Amino acid sequence: MATMHEIFSAYQSRLSDLEASQSTNPFAKGIAWIQGRVYPIHEAHIPMLDQGFLHSDLTYDVPSVWQGRFFRLDDHLARLERSCEKMRLRAPLSRPAIKRTLCAMLARSGIQDAFVELIVTRGLTGVRGLSADEVANLSNNLYMFIVPYVWVMSPEVQLAGNGSAVIARTVHRTPPNCMDPTIKNLQWGDLTRGMFEANDRGAGYPFLTDVDVSEPKGERQSDVNITEGSGFNIVIIKDNTLYTPRKGVLEGVTRQSVFDCCTRLGVPYVLDKVPLRMAYEADEIFMCTTAGGVMPITQLDGKAVGDGKVGPITTRIWDVYWRLHYEEEFSFAVDYEDERGLEGFENGEGKGMNGLTKAESKGVNGLSNGVGKQVNGITNGEGHANGKLVDGPAQ
Image (cartoon, rainbow, N blue to C red; front, top):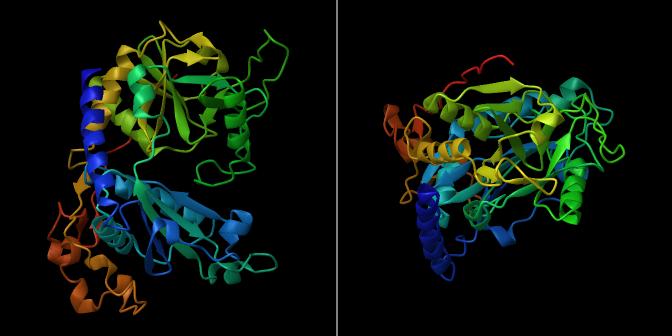
């Protein structure tokens, strides 16, 4: 657990510095980008008639920044683009423009450990009665905000190793043919109900299954499978092998990082159905998400998982996962001295893409002539690759 103590101690020191700056920097508590203007997070607002607000007609994604380095940003933006395509949405800014703007927002805020959210909505017009061509021509909206890093499982709980979960019995996961879970969405009715149940049963987190498991105590359906939880993928470890669901879940970027960790460590993993019984028989369990990383679960339905302690494989993956945040293959350093991606935003001048004239945009955040591969992660307007999916052994 030595590495965990070191990581969290350094994080707490940076957080203290950020909090000390909040009295003089109105953006240090968070910064939002809405329709070409930036606002302190608590002054940001959205149009009441936005279809994302009215009907959850949207998709979103959540990358993160750790110690001033954007982690797997291109992977998150690629998933956002795939989600938009499935939802017949289109982000009004290009990927390089989004990256440039986010980096400038970070510079303005000074936030070095950040939770970053991008939301693409249908806009102010609904789709009822519209043809496919008319839907394609709607003006979609993009909202972006950055706040200090958010923890699904707090450092204190991770350090204590007392993360607890329950198998939800009052609700199961919305079926994929109702809402495609590979599209990151805010239709959280089932997940919210799961959180209520976990709280009522004295646990921290709900694990949702693919079908109902509310049968009498002591009986479990043999065809029940684990899916995911409220904002996280679920990983089961049995006999030194990782098992995590292939279908009915978000294809998590952090889950991919776990696979990359497994490849480095020589730990096999299986991406397939995960029967409910496997969760009860697990040697180790952890959850994974951008907002918290690798999060150990040592108690399930009130009983110890394995020996009731954070397991050795979870610990090894935890260590490698946080090391990836400092590697150039997976991350890039943000230039906190460069706010030029925000020029023309605050006063609504709109000089062009991201408020920059063509001349001004050259060289901003390392975009000129392929320069700045390590500055804000942009080379020739393109993002660098972030690792490859390595298939695990078949189940």
